[in-house]
Image: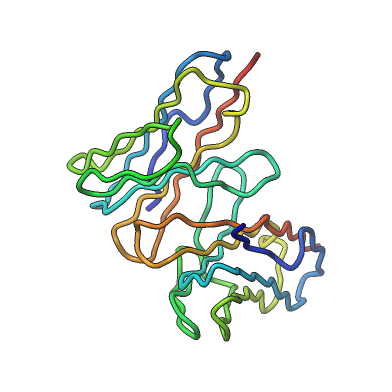
Length: 113
Length: 109
């Protein structure tokens, strides 16, 4: 059974802290994605990676960075967490190209106080 | 720019039909459809490709008008399990998927 796992389901951090969200997939997918989900705004792409050490900005990259040192792992980093980054964060992976579906992780609900 | 989905929300009774529309401002290579139940991750429903190829669940049907850059998802004889938020995710053939804001669907017994 295919799996995308995320390091935490719930996370509470303080303003200014550095936050790491980890995502691991076991499907040998080249593409990995980080989305942010907020009520009424749908799924907004933060960053994606199409290969190890390769990354592209999505629509809302400000305040975030990513790291992909191994094919199966994609990390989202909040350098200095702010309250407006309180949200649900979803990781996904897929084979390359628009003809392949994405598989999503269960999400991490991050609260920044 | 995010694709526009309509309606934003719909309530059905079991057995009724619904159509969810997705409209993009960009030329499309494919359209993906996903359903997300409350508190769960989005789950793949269907992909429609330029040229007419489709892949997905047998009980779900959809259309893709490449010229109009639109797609529609058809839910027939709805069941309680169809409740959730539906997202379309058009792609232009690159890595990026730009998802719509979602359509909330609730099926009542």
